[in-house]
Length: 464
Image 1 (cartoon, rainbow, N blue to C red):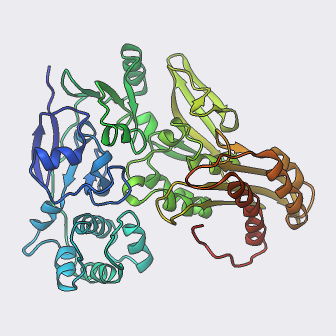
Image 2: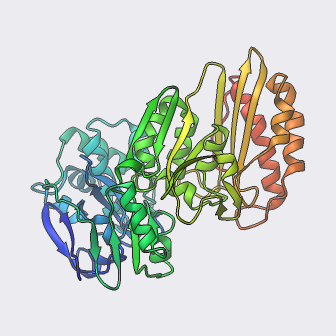
Image 3: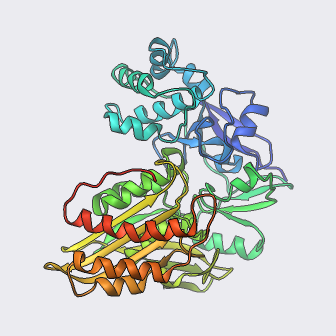
């Protein structure tokens, strides 16, 4: 039985009859004939395919990469393309008008995605500061020249105001697609477990910012997928009793205000490893579920002592994140379990946490090394320490020997021994992002940066 995918397209109700695993970019260009949305990288990196999506239960449209968003994920959503922005006002959306007046478009290929990203920013922030404009543009890579005239156009458009096409809420069905590709959208954890038991081979799909590359680039096909998007038990973010609990389907964008409040360094990392387009779609559960050794969320959560709450048909069990990873892309999570939530203790007085990402490009690049550091100070002495790295082994991992070298003395006094411990502990790989020697040297030297930060010294932030 065919179940059309129902959503709003540029303010009008739309029913799409297509494979649920079709990318939104493919459908827009081939079926809807809306070709302002471009394909640049097909991996969610360049932003040329940016569209605005308001998901069920949300009140704002957020920029999203259409190349790694699948049609089944649009069920019940509102989608706005650059063509919809052009029709939203006489002469186009204010961003489009100001881009034209200010000569802010170069070759034009990347411009639609840039317009979409800025329109999304202004929809949620009527008076953005310049750094907020740059953050909104971090996921859009213009290859022609500088961003100055684009930023100027954004500032002018903010003064003019502007609204996105309106759209009524469309109820999301529990199943969309057809015989060749069907997506299930359970509403409860119990329903999710029942579906997984009935369809053990189905893809478990959260945001898809990693695994959807198999569709976008490798042209894989998914006969069946089960989405976590609408499962209420997986969506919440709650602070209680000195703990913050992130539901596994919470997006990085939803988490960001909490991270900024409690761990500003972690928030900076999240802005770097995920553009607004990626943060709007990617989830904490997906980041940990893929078990990538270069997943930047893992080192930070390791040093925060995070605990995973794994849910199976017979109930929940708690697993410290330090015990979760077994080997490359292998974890202790059983086949019938899902990550329900991630629990982290809120910081106490005397605790310091920093996380540093070293990559070839500052924004939206895969880490060569990611180092995370957490200490609890007793006066001027380290009472407890957790140090973790990504990109240094088959899994994200803590360095116990370096931790031991710091405990019981001032940070500055223990750094030399801690650096030696890092060099002795790890035998990283060599690949296109860096040699083994480079990785080891950088990982050890990040401890110097940590010590300098704690000492109040100014440390330049750069991509290496």
